[in-house]
Length: 129
Image 1 (tube, rainbow, N blue to C red):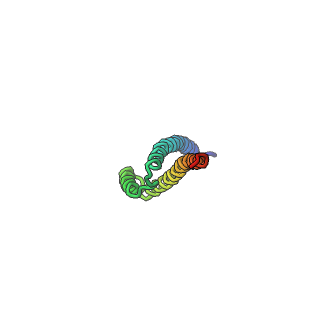
Image 2: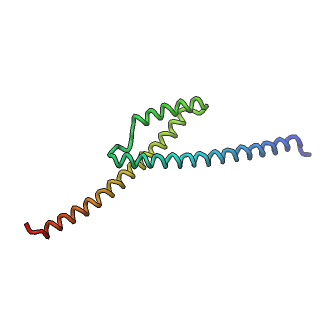
């Protein structure tokens, strides 16, 4: 003999799990889209820094952001240490991108200078003194 109440409770639990997991899946997708938007902005920040000779990292801003997000996490009921670890991971990746952008910009500037220097030297050899 089967326990109808137990079967019904288990079915209800499975239905609630499915609803909760669908909500979690939607939130995960939203997080990915927000991170993509964040990285689009930080990519432009990296370009500006590289174009103006600014360092890829800004420790003072990072410290302010960590303090700000810890407070937001606290008020949202999220463990502040977890929020800080997450932000530090994101910031480390942003800095890595900024360094890569700076290297690319430096290389793109160095190539034309190198070519024009070679052309200038070649022309100097052709022009009699």
